[in-house]
Length: 378
Ligand code: ACO
Image (cartoon, rainbow, N blue to C red):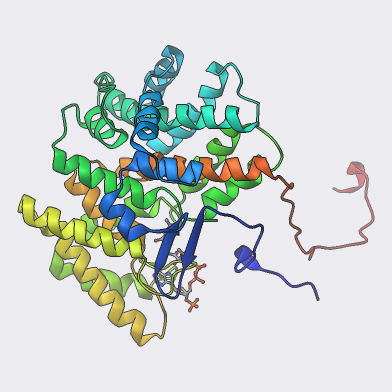
């Protein structure tokens, strides 16, 4: 009997020096640094440098990296966004935009280290620019000019909301980007690496990764969490929603459960704290209170069923993004903006020591059938 690892559960496809996860202890490490410390002290750009070059940057290295990030989009790409039908989901727009950018790159296909790093730097600014421009255009407005001296976090808020963000909002955005930057061989990163393993170009790999992230079992869960909270509407109605959902055929409450973590995702622990603080500061505690209640009911119900299902990164990010002023359709694209850092780090590793990814499927279909010409098939 062939052993089958459905969902590639527990399969080691390669070695990596980028990220390690301890699912039993709830620990996430980027290149040797605990995520809790990075979220507390590092900017997104510092984490990009860490993930891409293996070390935290010096001041001059950080300044150089920040100067290289540009948020400009080719005119035809903006025209493409303007031509999309009203209501086009931002992840469809982003996936199309990333793919289209390859046509405006003088060397989209080179997979040598320096060329792939150049493409990574370009996407670091252009992915947020695509997300923001799509949202502004869909709302009937025009893209907002970035501030060339500001960070990715600051420019994301500026380009989406159309105003200079407060320092506090930029810090929260930075924390969210740091927490979402990397997570080992998750579905979208695996898809990106598998795509790159054919030695196709980095744009194709990131386009595939964006498509993978969109799914509700992966990055799409953060929008699904807010959708659920909006439908529920009040703290009192949370318990019934959870019980009804668990009793339904699919039985999944979005924002809970993880392939790797058996305890609370450490990113969810940090975002829970951020969500609490934002709720206190803004006086709008509804989303946080509902999230707390959902966590309480899920803990009780999952415990009673003997299942280790705790909040994941998507759960509290929903209320955080809401309080930062984002529409729920933008939540998964924000995830993508951050994850460009991790996706690219993995592409560097994959291209540097490549082996084509080609697993097998165990055939269970029919055999030995005799071919009947079409005239005899009725
Ligand atoms: N709600 C209720 N029960 C759940 C949930 C959930 N969210 N997640 C897992 N379970 C239960 C399953 O029903 C299953 O029970 P069973 O053994 O009786 O069948 C058990 O826990 C194990 O679940 P699996 O689906 O086998 O675990 P898997 O590793 O395949 O799934 C996944 C992980 C897909 C993330 C799952 O937990 C889920 O669907 N969660 C909801 C979607 C979500 O929040 N996704 C974001 C994940 S984080 C990220 O990708 C950034």
